[in-house]
Image (cartoon, rainbow, N blue to C red):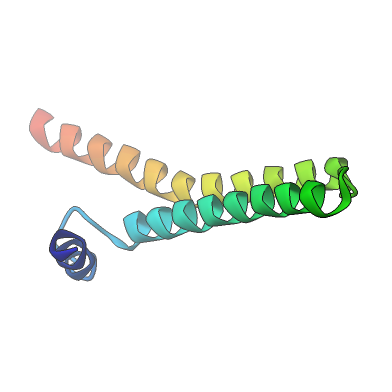
Length: 95
């Protein structure tokens, strides 16, 4: 728990390699995981109470696809930023 708190403190530092993009990726991943667990719980609860699945699984699949897009969207900003940062660092070595 102490390491997590230290990591969260480092996210605010501008000179650190950790950034708000990393924090957004972590938060969106945790949020997406919680949403997926809740969906699984709701499906199991639906089967236990009714004996069959009453939920529309096509709409549920689209919802989970959107959750995956949410997670991927927060990861794209970090990937693009790191790619341009690595390109800048290689240009500095060539001079």
